[in-house]
Length: 451
Image 1 (spheres, helix red, strand yellow):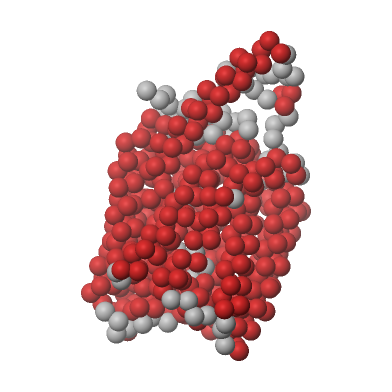
Image 2 (cartoon, rainbow, N blue to C red):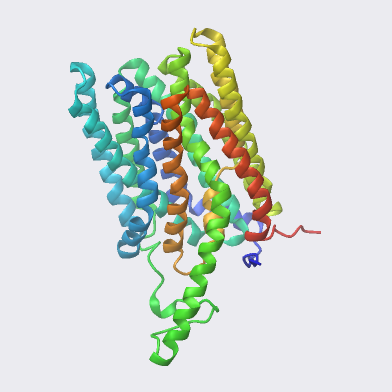
C-alpha cells in the first residue's frame, strides 16, 4: 500500500503567513496577474482569428493542439534550462520572446486579415502559437518551482491558490480588455495588448525575483532518499545511494500517476473551455465581443472562491476542493452541451443565456479548484530536485492539455460542438470520483484544528 506523504508543516501565525505572501507579490503574484490578463485577452480570440483566416471548425480545434504538445514536451527541457541558468533568467528570456512573438503576430496576422488570408498567414499563425506555447511552459514551471521553495508547508495551499487566483483575476481583466480592444479596432490588436502586458510582467520578474532561485540544490548539500546529507559520494557507498534514489524516483512517479489520473480530466475541462465556448458561441450566433464579456463575467466566480479554497485545502485536505471542483465543472459542461443543442442557431437572448449560465457554473467549480493542480504537484514532489520532479508532473498533466483539443477535434468531425462539451463534462465527473478515492491516501494530512 502506498503511504501518505509525510507532512510536518511549521506552524505560522496569521501575521507570519501574511508576511510570506506579501514577499511574493513582486516576484510572482503581480507578474502572474499581468501576464494572465494578456494571455486571457488573446485566448478567446484565437479560434475566431483561425476561422477568419480560413480554418474549418475541426482545424480550428486542432491548432490548439500546439499548446498541448508544448505542455507534454516543454516541461522537462524547461526544467533543465532553469537548472542551468536559474528561474529568473529563464523567465526574463522567455518573456522577451513572448513580446517579440506577439509583435510579429500583430503585423503578419493583421496583414493577412486586411488583405485576404493565404496559406502563408495560416502557417504563420500556427508557428506563432508554437513559440508562445513553448515560452509559456517556462513561465509556468519557473513560477511554480519558485513558489515551491518560498512557501512554508503550513501555507502552501493558500499561497498556491493565491497564485491560481491571480490567473483567475486575469481571466476577468483579460477578456474585458480584449473586448475593448476588438470593439475599438480589430481582433489582431489583441496581440499588441499581450505584448505590452508580457513586457510589463517580464520587467517585474527582472526587478523583484531573487536571482538563482529554482536552480538545482548544490550537490554537496543534497539529501538522499533517507534524508541524510551527502557530499561527494565515495565509491563503496555509490551503489547504495543510487538504489535509494531509484526507489525514491519510482515511488514519486507512482504517486504522480495515481493522482494525475484523476486530475487530468479536470485539466482537459479547463483547456477545452476557451475552445468550446467561442466555437459554441459562433454556432449559436453570438458575436465576438459578447463571447469575451461572457468569459470575463463568468470568471468573477473564480476569484470569489480563491481565498476560501486555499483555507479549505490547508485545513481539510486537498480532496475537500478537488472533488467538488471536478464534479461541478463536469455538470457545467454537460449542461452547456444540452442547452446548446436545444437553443439552435438563431442567436439572440436565448443563445446568450445558453452560453452564459453553464459558463457561470463551470467558473464556480474552476474557482473552487484554484491552484489545485500546482499544489498537488508540489505535494507529490520531494524537496530536493523539486524542479526536475515538477517538470515530470507538468509533463504528465500536459497529456491532458494535449488530449483535450484532440478530443474536441475528433468529436467535431462527426458531431456538433455541443457533443464535445458533453464528453468533456462526463470525463470530468469520472475524474472527480477517482480523486475522492485516491487523494486522502496520497496527499498531506489536513492541518490540525486548534483547540
